[in-house]
Image (cartoon, rainbow, N blue to C red; front, top):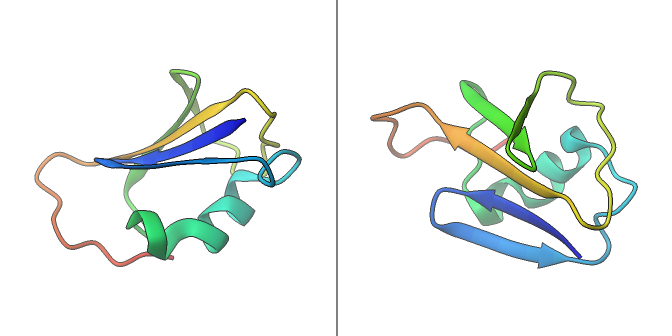
Length: 75
């Protein structure tokens, strides 16, 4: 089951497999408080720059906010 993480917010989802990072951000951005801009995306600890990367069932996708960012608007 894939996980989406942003700060202290984390959810595990079965239906995220096969979706892109952009699709996950659009679907769960508000729930996880994912910033619209200025965050680094990691899949299983490795930085990803292509937001069309497909999420696999055992992936851990983390949206890392820049240090000191507070109250970011979700996508």
